Length: 399
Ligand code: CTP
Image (cartoon, rainbow, N blue to C red):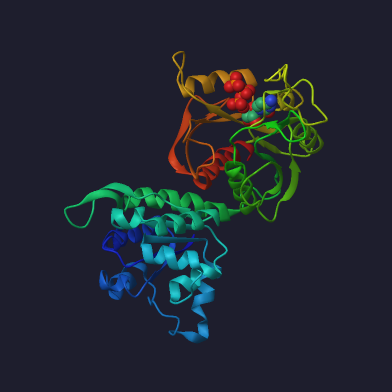
């Protein structure tokens, strides 16, 4: 893989020399692009001798080779470590005032940031907003570790182990290998709305982030993607066929019309299990005799189960399970029971709670395959990382 390793001006830059070694030993070609400030911590000679390439921070060297465009365009992966508050801010604002920020603007490949800074800087609302901006643009920002910082202080802000950074970054870089070329993916995202009357509905908290991350990852790996969006609260991606729906009936119709031609179907949408038995054409009013209306509910179709029942030969079907553990069983035990019940090829199980799973950028999941003896645990990671891991399992299974 052709990797650009951007280095920010933080003390953790010294650890990035080992990260560079690791990437080189794994057989990757690495160009190091430090900021001017980074060179105060680790000098040019170190980066040049470890990477085997000339190193500069400026756009004014080798102008005829146009490195600020060429390096970004040719990269399969850009990894920035340590990503300082300043570098995160400049990237979020679209600045192009040194070689690294120019490269970040010209890149068309996955980008991973590994921040490291003092806790106060990481928790400052400016940094929090800038990190959210980067994530909303599809950049993977790894959460820093909690631990000893430069001085005697401890807290969130420490650079994670370089092995962990390399693993997350390389999993993102793999996307450019186009291992899903020629495969047709049908993905659902978001959450359905079941209308009670023209203004009220029963909905759920799904934002569509995970489904969108899967669609982007599959597209980047060469797949032809149809994305059915049910009321998503994130920007839908380009380069995929989009179908917008609102209710579970519309979702079911859209899935049915697209499912036969799909090699892989991923049901990431949160589909309502119940819908009002009677829809009121007019807004339900408060009346004097009845202050609270009775809303009778009926079951909706289980779309995933219908898909499994009518599956074409060779088709691969993935379900998602949002679970909360209870006194009867753990999250994974509930997941295994659901996998048996739904009989899909793969079930991605995540724990949900008031601040877990829904609408967040991070998630932790367990991937359970029907024919595998073991499960794959993905610890708290961005939804992009989780999408990459889920696609790795699918790519292997449909090869
Ligand atoms: N699903 C579906 N149709 C439904 C409900 C769910 O296709 N009417 C799909 C979801 O898209 C997801 C999977 O089934 O891929 C599991 O969804 P979940 O809500 O966790 O499971 P339920 O079947 O609703 O099970 P339970 O409510 O018992 O947990």
